[in-house]
Amino acid sequence: MVTTKNIWESLEKVSDPEIPVLSIVDLGIVRNVEIDKELCTVTITPTYSGCPAMHTIEQEILTTLSPIIKTEVKSTLSPAWTTDWMSENGKKKLREYGIAPPENEVDKSVLFAKPTIVPCPKCNSQDTKMISQFGSTACKAHYQCNHCLEPFDYFKCLR
Image (cartoon, rainbow, N blue to C red):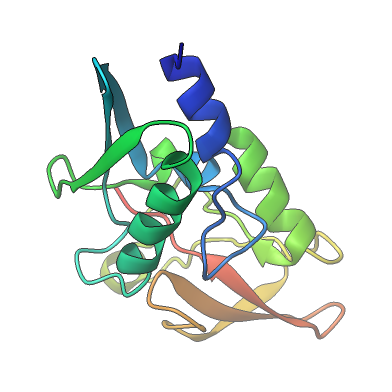
């Protein structure tokens, strides 16, 4: 008999296509798993409403779960995804991969002229600067460390 615990464990193996070190569970986009008789419904929320990876993620969920149980994937935009939903393990994986995880603070520097301090994931220096508001994807900004001079992405904090 398939349980929701089995499904969650299987979903841990589904990687985000843009950041393959993160599972979709680490990322916090899996909002709910329901099993009703012979059907599993997985509800997901995109990190951004126009996230191009969502179709790929849906297909990977179906590919992963179909051998176990008949599955449907539902997308919901409400409540909107937030970086608060990322697991601590996911944030650790981001840092180890070379992407600075969200700093639990929405960047308000435009309003108050005090930039968010983003530590370098390579050397942990807090002497960094934003190079571009947008990095390799819309959910990341591009930074550079003034200490070790390495460029890196920062996973933006969204709330």
